[in-house]
Amino acid sequence: MNKKTDAKRTHDDWPSVNATVAPLVQALIDNAADLRVGVTRGSLGECRIDCGVKAVGGLEAGRIMAEICLGGLGRVALEAADPQSSWPFLVTVHTSQPVLACLGSQYAGWSLSAKEDGKKYSVLGSGPARAMGSSEKLFDELGYRDKADSACLVLEAEGPPPAILVEEVAKACGLAPDRLTFVYAPTSSLAGTVQIAARCLEVAMHKSHELHFALDHIIDGIATVPLPPPSPDFIKAMGRTNDAIIYGGRVQLYVSGGAKEARELAEQLPSLKSKDYGKPFADLFAAVKGDFYAIDPMLFSPAMVTVTALKSGESFEAGYIDTAVLSRSFS
Picture (cartoon, rainbow, N blue to C red):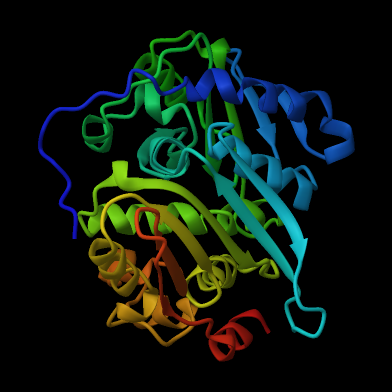
């Protein structure tokens, strides 16, 4: 397999994800009533967009959230699959900039935590603001840092961030708080369900990185997952969105380089390679007593993968859609 290089690289030709996403954020604000989202200003002037806490939100709000997570560099669609299937609707994601869109923006890698009025607020931030303010080492590997006059962060959360956290993000991004937008929705909401399910391609990109595949060799990508039903129970909701990817996600990657490397990537990417494969995620989470880090990280992968080597035209497929586990999880 192609090994990622230790050589310092830069991607000065990559676009600004925060500038690119700005029209999507503005459209979410302009169409707030139609999309049933709530737009307010926080105490520091930050824009807060509620897509599923007090606001109703919905599938379309979640679809737009997912495109915002991708830094405006991807397209997310709600589509129909086999009408005979128990779960006939799909979330499909495509980006022609899979490394930047998925790893440089969508990946939930910015760990944020603060206390206010005795209450702890902990969240993983995703979206384009990461590329400006997060200290993740991943950005050194990507050779990319964004510069823009505004930034947007997406939070899988039960409420907006407290002022102390807004200040922290603003300082890290080098912006005034009123130049920040926070888009948030809980896992149990319709919008949260869509935006999390829309991470199938990102999960494949992250695992490719963990497998030390050369990221610059991933030219294009597309992924689809069954749209899971939401649940008011957080554990069930989290389980279903993970299961949609782990047991129902399908990814196609187009790579440069040799057929041998493409075959090796296809063989190692699917979730069935994990020792924890086979149970609904909620059951697995209960078995480890809620210790997320006790779960094999290699489980977080799509169920089925096709990798096409552009140089030879050969395609390599591995994994399968596990409808039995999906049915247990979604019912």
